[in-house]
Structures are given as C-alpha cells and as structure tokens.
Length: 305
Image (cartoon, rainbow, N blue to C red; front, side, top):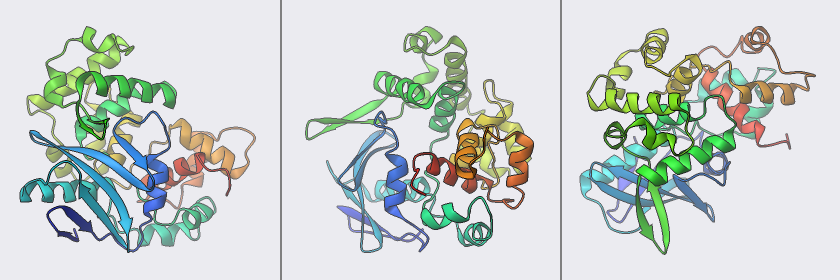
C-alpha cells in the first residue's frame, strides 16, 4: 500500500491502471444507494472503525486519491485503517497488467477494456456486508434490492450528521445477531432471507465464520465450498462474495442475469446466451473471470460503446 498521512487528510497513490472517474460512475449507478454519496466528483463515505465513525470525503487530484476527514481528525491508528479500507475498497492491490493483456485480444472484452481502462472492482471489504447484500439481491430486481438495503441500513445501522445530512454505515453482525426474524421481516424481507442474514450474523459473532479464515484458504474451490456450507449461500452468492470481498479474480458468477444481459446486448444476440455459450465466450478469461464480469456489468449502464 502506497500512501502518506497528513493528519487532516491522506494521500493514497494508486497503480497506473486506475480511473477514479470510472469507479465513481459504477458507485453512482443507483440513486437509492445509502452507504455513500457522490457530489461534484467526490464520494462521501462513512467508515466504521471499532467504536468510532469516520466520515471521509474522497477525491482524485494530481494522480492521487485524497481522503479528507470532515468531522474530526481520527487517531494515527484509525487513519491507517482508513487508508487500508480505501485501498481495498478500490481493489488497488490487484495488478491488472495481465488482465489488460488478455482483454486486448479477446473478442468480447477488447472494446470494454479500452473504454473502461482503469476501472477496478468496487469491493465490499466487510464480509458481513458482502454476504448480507448478496442475499438481499437473490431472485429480485436490483432496484428492490437497493430498497431492502436502504431499509435495513436505516433501521439497524449507525449514522453521523454533517451539514444537515445523514451518512450511514452498514449494520454490524453483532447488532443483527441479537435480532429475531420478525424484526427483519417487517422491512419486507422474506422469512428465509431474514433467517439467512441473522444466521450468518450469529455465526460471525460466535467466531465460526470470519474473513480471515476464508482468506487462509487459497484454493478457489475450497473457498467456494466453505461459503456454500452457509445456509442461504448458493453458487452465485459464493462467487459474488469471493469476487467483491475476498479478491478471487477467478470467481465467476456465471448464472448472473446481468452478465447474461450484458453479453446479449454487447454481442447483438437475439436471446440471452446459455451457460454453455458463456463458457465458450469465457474460454480465454481464465484467472480473470471476476474482472470480465465486472466490466460487463459496467457495460449494462452504458450503451454508447
């Protein structure tokens, strides 16, 4: 991680394959998003560190990411944690040279890699948030998934107020572990989804499920199997969490509806491709399926290519 601490603000120096504007476009894809706000080229993000809430204004100036602390200056240790969080949020540890080499000769990805060069997977560093968000999105459309997230966050999360506006953090697994199913169901969650999310929170509170334990397992299939042992986690959810939280660039949510629609639109197909056809299109993506999928998701919001 390459960064400098100036107490009231941080400078984070990303790799050369980085496009802050593209990342902001992806972050701004829904006006229902409750966990960050985008204003005039800056993203405002409330980051929870143990018992403190740190409100950050994040922008891009002269080839570095500038992180300003808006309400108070955090401790030295907390500032380091903020830098680590943002480094992970923008997936800056990932060396994308191989991805771009592969994409430059791939019939599906070539145009996307050129147009969105520097776009990085916008990650979800918190494992509970990643799992809960993936479960919320199961078998419903994206706008309603965002509605559920907003209700969940505003009911059980924490907030800080700045210049008359509220900025929210995702509920902690400790908080959710103490709830009963009806507490979540009243937000229009199905009984199953409420049970799954509370069950995951209880597993995390009890130490049976941690990000550290999952990261210790390097093998893709081992991690996928570990996640799929969790009640409510199928193959799509496991791959989504591996992609967005655990940084497995081989993760491939091949059954994803957005992926299917993006391929149909990009390639001018009459109907959505079958799983077998998607495997053919992805033949050259080995090791980079997550990035290929992410770029195809980005394309869904952009018909100018």
